[in-house]
Length: 312
Image (tube, rainbow, N blue to C red; front, side):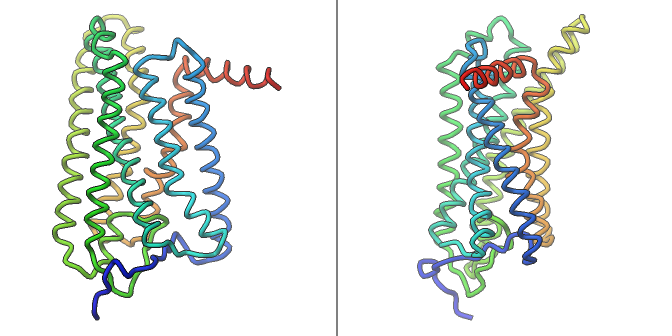
């Protein structure tokens, strides 16, 4: 079968989770609810931090960045799926697919780097408390966030340009609920060896290095905490890092499941279900994880809600 050049591909088909109309309606309700909770929860985190001057610290600056990113990540993956179910139209244009792919990659990589930067922030706070305000000054925090975003955009651009050089046959069905890089590459009729090498290398570099950075940070954090004599001091240090470790475990655990299932050629729709964890559910859970176990965030959210109620 003659390959069809990518420039002539008008659209792909996003197959989603199921073809059953009744299940489609249920999925629409579930994902719409998850999306609304995600937007509301992360907006409350952002506003709560913005209106409380004592929370204008590096830790909460990066948390605000994470909340912004979670809103964008969830929007990039969920909105198109909800529109497809509502309009009973699984198609997505070639341009739309590449655009969605670009945004998904940017948000995924940015979350990856933000979690690493947050680990470094905890490392400096616990291991070098006297130098904390000097090291983690506002300009440096902004620079870390900006560099993370820049690398994320460059990496996403690289993958998008790699996809543009591929050719496709008549099978343009993506067994996923959004345009995922691995699934698009698998549809190609071209030689994808270079693309697979680039994906593997990017995963090792932009995924492996941040993970090593997080492990390094927490190795020194644990060593420092164990030297603290008071139980109260140990509890405070571990509780500060506990929320971040929970998010890190969920993000990288889910990401690893998706990568392994894709590499082992497990059913694509099972891979799509695994993708829900790192691209949809985690973004909804983050506000709860960071607020329920954080006394300052609880107070900030309570004050914000009181302010909103008083305006009415």
